[in-house]
Structures are given as structure tokens and as C-alpha cells.
Amino acid sequence: MKTLRDIIKSILQDVEILEMHGNLDIPVGGIHFDSRKIEKNFAFVAIEGGNSDGHQFIQNAIDNGANVVICSIFPDEKTNNVTYIRVANTSYSLGWFISSFYGNPSSKLKLLGVTGTNGKTTVATLLYDLFRQMGYKAGLISTVVYKINDKEIDSTHTTPDALMLNQLLQQMVIEDCSFCFMEVSSHAVVQNRIAGLHFAGGVFTNITHDHLDYHKTFDQYLKAKKTFFDKLPRSSFALVNNDDKNGKVMLQNTKANKYSFGIHSLANFKCRIIESHLTGMLLELENEEVWVKLIGNFNANNALAIYSAATLAGEKKQNILAGLSRLKPVCGRFETMYSDKGVIVIIDYAHTPDALDNVLSTINEIKPEKSSIITIVGAGGDRDKAKRPIMARIAVELSDKVIITSDNPRSENPEDIIAEMLAGVDEILVKKVLCITDRRIAIQKGCMLAGKDDIVLIAGKGHENYQEIKGIKHHFDDHEVVKENLNIV
Image (cartoon, rainbow, N blue to C red; front, top):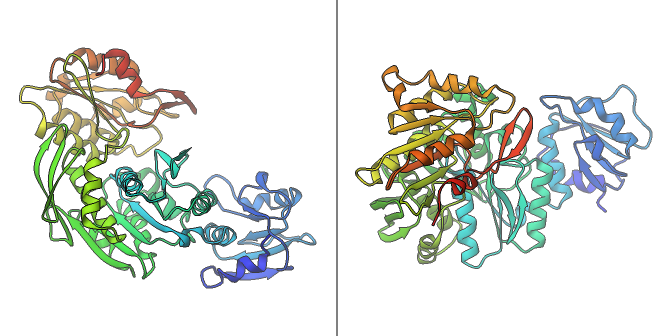
């Protein structure tokens, strides 16, 4: 069992320790930030969260067996045989203490982080699939699922908390993983969930309007993404999408080795779309042609990001291209289903204006000439309200028929969300819109309206198999509802 002195010794250069009181030569059996999960000889880290302050639960933690308390303010009375450590920032320090406790697992494999508004899941997941194809043992931490080689663990957050992150990474090291591919959310950066991790590389896909309910302004959202690159070590690489004007912003203060990819701009890694169909694309990638099963311009960017990151990770060009051609789309990301009557259904996680625009623009570019597009879309409750009317406007302008329905209303009234979306639709185009609150009935109606070669886009939930209403998650899977209404071949 490690001692507190062992843990502190390895992080002194990274954590600002202001004051210590008590014995450092004591065993530490675990670290936690939830006083209810403290056991004998655990260290308790008092985090100042949005809903509560961990400093209020210091005594509870001690009563449960904590022999170390890490806090930003010492309690008025100290308990005998408990060591107190005062730090400048407890949420930042948490990651470093936990990483040290678990033996710094992120430094024992190549950890690649992927950040951006759209494309994180596709890029991280397909990098994992690519490297598994090439024979590597690898891990994945994504919105959809966490994986350690072929073992799957249910995903709780896009980027889990520092404790779970290090536990997952430690298990990957035990299972001999050489790589881990991880989505890095803006929330995780701001909340210091990735503090103490050693990244071998970082990838930026793009940044558009999202999460302003949390970050308040686009500048703050941009800053959160940039902070990830600012903190990359000199030994790592920073790879950004130069087709996004903010790609260069990400590289301004990074110490990492700088690289870029792009289709429409000057970049270190280039790609050109030769053909685009509903079944895939023919790409010219670094002067080589490759057929990929991904669809649309935005996925060409994702494929290029995957190729570029794999190259920077040390893989050979021909191995990467061969692997790319075998990759399948990620669940709920421009996922196509075909009915026996010729109806095409596309299920996509698009829940931002830019993502919805990308998906619908792609469908319009490659659909059969006489096909109609029927879009079923909603917006999540208790989230950024500003994007609701914008998403509805985009859907109506780029579709022949739109059904506005529920997404995850959470604590909000779904009819209120639908009304806010409808407010973004031009009066002349309102006749193209149906409002159906029940998502199951909305999908059923969309399937009924579709004829041969028509395309039904079901946007917003993608891989999710639940619908959150008034704090309760009810089972709901867009795929299942489609199969209830169409005979999928």
C-alpha cells in the first residue's frame, strides 16, 4: 500500500500545496471525493461543486475512515491521527493525487484525446477500431461506451471523472493496452477531470454553437477547448482541423508539436472527395485513393483526422489506408437503414445547428433526384435554448417535411421546447411542419409519409436508448421504433 509521502513526492511540481498538518508516513488505501464512499485509510478530497461543497462533508469522511483530508480551507477543529493538506485548487489537485495513487497509468500507454463540438465520437471510436484491426490492444473512452480491448463498460459521461478515468486507464495498462483513444469534453476541461493525465496527442475536430447553457458565451466555450491544447506536453502532438477558423487558435499557446489537416485549406495532411454516395465515399488521401464506408463532407474530415492521428502515432500509410477502408460508421452517426419498400432511414446524433446542417446538406447532395427528405428533430430540455429556433429553421429549409418532436425534455415541458423551436421557422414555411410531442408517434408518422427512395432523417439522439422525462430515464431507441414501423432489410 502506498504512503501519503509516496503520492505527494511525485506531484510536488504540479500541485500547489500550501500547507500540511500531520504525519505523511501513513498508508493510503484509496482516494475519493464522495464522503459516502470513503473507507478505512482513504484520502478524502473536498471538492467545491456546483450543487454542494465537499468541505461540509469532511467530518462525515473522517467518520467513515478517512485518514487524509485534502482541502482548500482547513476545518476549525482538526481530528487526531488525520493528516490535513491544504491546496490552492482541490478539483485540479484531485486528478494529480489520483493519478499518482494509481501509478500514473496515462504515461504507460499512448493516450490520444479528441475534442471538438462534432466528430469526437466518430474520430475516437474509429481510431480505436482501426488500431484494434491492426492488432493492437487498445482502450476507448467515449460518449457511447468505454472499452478495454473487447470488454465493454457502460458510458456515464463523455469524459468521466478523474477517479473513474484513472481506474479505466489502470485497467487498460493491466490488460497490456498500447493505446487509449478518449473524447475530451469542454466540461471535463473546465472541471479539471483530465488534470494529471499525460496525453501523447490531442486532436481538434471543429467548434460550433453548443453548451452555452454551461459556458455562457462562445468565447468561454472556445477557451475551454483551447485549454486542453495549452496544457499538452512538449513530447505530444497537437493536430487541428484547418478548415475550421479556430483550428489555428487551438495552437497559439501549445508546447506540443503542431500539425494540421484540411480539405479546403493549406494543411500538413490533405484530402479530396472524388465520389460521394449514400453507401460511402471515394477519397484521395495523401495522393492515394481509398474507398470508405463513411458518408458526407464532414465524415471526409473525420476520416482525414483519423488518418493524420494514426500517422502521427507512428503507423505506416498503407496499413492505415487498408484499415480505413474496412471501418464501419459508429452507431447513431449517419447510420443508414433500408426498408423493403425502398425507404431510407438515417439515424444521427446531430443535436447542434452545425451538425444538423452538415447532415442535411450531405443528404441533399447525394440523394436520388426525386427523393423527398422527411426530418424528425427535437431539442434537449435544460440545455442551451438559443440553438432551438436555429435548428428548426435549418431543418425546414433543408427538408421537404419536418416533424418537430421531443428529444430528452428532462425537467422542461416538451410542448414549450417545441414552441421555441417553431419560433425559428419562417411563416411561409410553417406549412411544411408537423408538431408531434410523442417521439414514438412522430417516428411512426415519418415512416408512414415516406415512399420509395424517400429519406427519413431521425436526428438528435443517435445511439441513446433512453428518453429522459421529469428526471426518469425511460427506455427508448430510435432504431427499435423504426423497425416497428418498417421492414428493415
